[in-house]
Image (tube, helix red, strand yellow):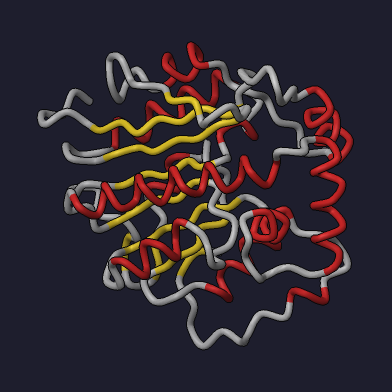
Length: 259
């Protein structure tokens, strides 16, 4: 599945018989696109990690600030890795609201979420059903009209609340290196990831919850994230998100490409 919405019918996914991780996230950040099944799943998630809603909102605030900085620097095309759905509020909707002519390529590996995202996509939004580590497929995705991304122009890459879903860190490091190699000078990468750094919000129950759901996650330490981002910046600045179990970074390519 690749492309933007073309005469798509209104999405009726609230009749789904299973909760959607993307709609659960929308509920946690205060959006409206969710159903009773999603809210029940969110309750279970909050039992495992009581700060999950606060964490989701902190990551969204970071993503919004990063998007606004990228737009201010002239970036006009974005690659959203693990995008979920373009429901309000979301980075994709922020980009669309601030820059209606910008291109947003949303990468999502969950089949039903990708299908729902396609129905919700606004003009300029495209959905690629792929794993974020399948970098060649992502970077060279195209429609009948041509490639979705112009790799000769700066690219804003968002990896918000998604990298910890890749439990193979060797593969993750390679993927981030691939994205850096494809990025022209003036490109940027914004990341938020789960990290077991908070003394007040332990992750063990949350990790068990995801393991039982069949969606294992692997937190990333600040040192590990810094090493993963080394192709982007020699000493990327890793930020804590308040006292929450997550870290974040916004890093840019040098004015002269080193790829």
